[in-house]
Image 1: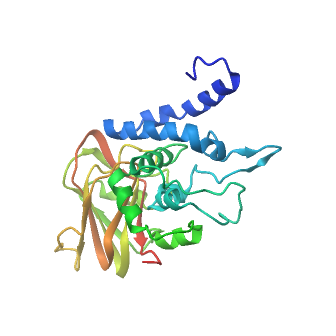
Image 2: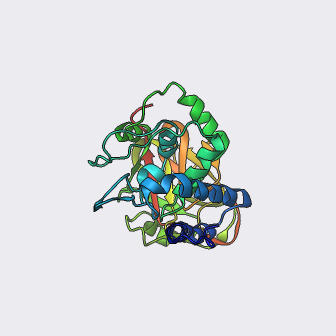
Image 3: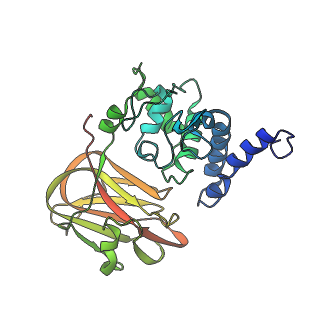
Length: 301
């Protein structure tokens, strides 16, 4: 319809929205995930772009191109990590964002289905340069139930207090691996353009361990494969140890599905030794880490 429309305005809108499609097609997504992303794109093109803009940077206000109706989605930490975006979709968002107040307040979208919420979450998280984990309708259903008593929109301060915060790697951390250990420092040097990689395709059993100088309270691990978008761990397990030699049963196991793999533990733990083991397979794809960070517990629990 867009391509054949005689309206120049509609054709322009369509071309700008469809410009995101190649970014989605380039991802290593399953058939079901691609379907979710496609549905999310349709939602964005019919509902969200009017305030957030064709490029996710915010729609400029008429007569003032330097002011946008709504905050940018591109590069937003609220969008890419934790469940903040899902909470906003279910209950709305109020108040200033990074010191700015926007004319268009985000209203609740809770009247839509769990699949609808999941689809738009997945699209926004993986468009406009964003890289974030995909979610499913059952996950949205659980969050909806967990937050059923919420009657007011969230604020940024509240969302930040609910989300485990990344802790940058320190020089006192000691990293080891069964592969390419000499380049491990590139995976936690604060430079997102450098990376540690297995230098071979992913296979079960490859691991990276972190030794801390003293026990710390940890909520999880953040693995960012950066521009090596398809080098995320296809599956993983995380183990803890008291001495770095004998490892406890996995505290968490899961699957990665995007360049940003956020691994949250069931509850915060105090430990000095962590080991992430890649347990999946990805023919032709390395396992790469551009930045490894630990997650400090959320303030509000």
